[in-house]
Length: 413
Image 1 (cartoon, helix red, strand yellow):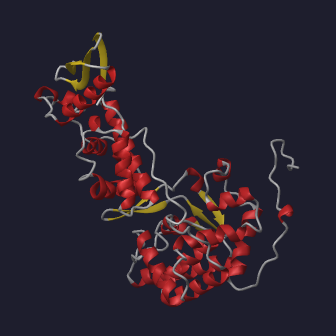
Image 2 (cartoon, one colour; image 1 turned 90 degrees about the horizontal axis):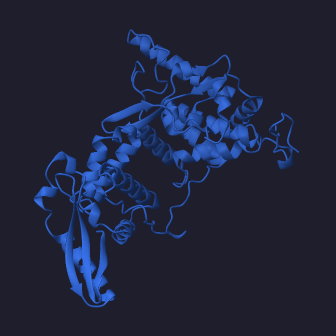
Image 3 (tube, helix red, strand yellow; image 1 turned 180 degrees about the horizontal axis):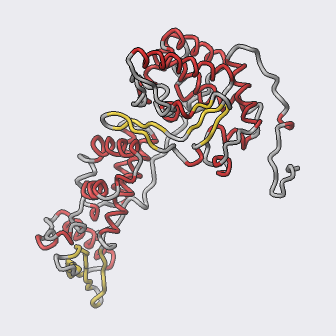
């Protein structure tokens, strides 16, 4: 709580503590007079501010909608206000994550605290408490981000009267031993074992995993593939949507970033597997007296393909396949994307690798053309031959990697 001291005369000090604004918008302070040295006066000011924080908020400061964002505003109030006015702008997955964090780690701990009474010391203690409870570094960072945004909005809505005690705080540190093991790329042998096990488990899941291996797609992207995204004539697949899990089901949204919208070359083996799955779905639709639409989701579990598969269902299916394949448990579904990124590093330039994986650092012009670069075709065929067991492809020397044109169009030296 803000406060100040002022010398009235030698040895006499005026103490002032900011209380907020009343119903008419006027600033309220509490004053006191203290006799003694300046250091003693400063200590008295701290005690006075603490007493004001513990004291009930005057009724005048609680009345009226105009004073909602005042001295008695709590962290929970700020988060609820954000939920009512702005939370819909977040992605569904972020909204769900914030909701879980608030319900499990904020609402009944720091949530009831008044923002005006919080200090950076209090907030950092709370964050260290989250770490002590076993929350990951990412979860603690997300909790701080949520609190920071909520308090920043409350400060703005209060006209600058409320502080933002989160802005000057620091996150706890994690040693290397405390951090989780990074996701590693699967080996060629592990990928082959996974694809063999998936083929004997479920053809739809096996095809999804092969597409991820062959393209490096994210799990939400592969779940959103529709049949009209697959171009058998050109040997490509289009990524322009993603599926996220929300409360009560799934939702289709735009991809993670604009760079994620891309057209990717497919090797012949993966394309054949996709076409075989399409033929199987056409037969099933025919038996049910319907026709499979081009806009149907390619990997849907519904006969008509109108509902996308769940990313969480794909992850659980991968775990079962991993068990059947007897592959190490530190290989996750995302390890297949790492495998693809690592494998194509030997045959394409860095810019082409970024384009194929949908990383946001690639030039956006590439995503507004239907042209599939020859490098991308080479990447597709390389991964296809490798997974099919055709042997290792010769790895070119690093110095012979294709160069990217410089500003003048000539190859860089």
